[in-house]
Figure (spheres, rainbow, N blue to C red):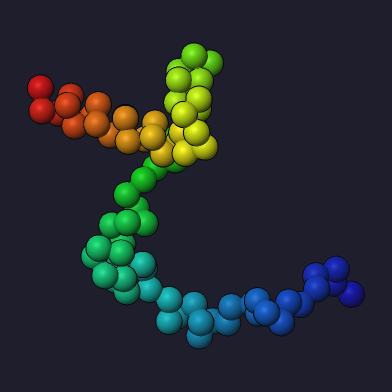
Length: 79
């Protein structure tokens, strides 16, 4: 007997289900697809002072750091 428990809310895909699948870029609008692939998650080692400089202004510090990096990248490209 198998130890796998069937989940009625998440049934196993059938061959027919798999045959109907299409890449996201084929079924989503270009704008929606662009939003889901627009960001890449990376891991950075940052100094405690850099993190503190953003974190001391509130909980959205990661979003503000991303905005600062985006702005720096725009300036670098324009230079």
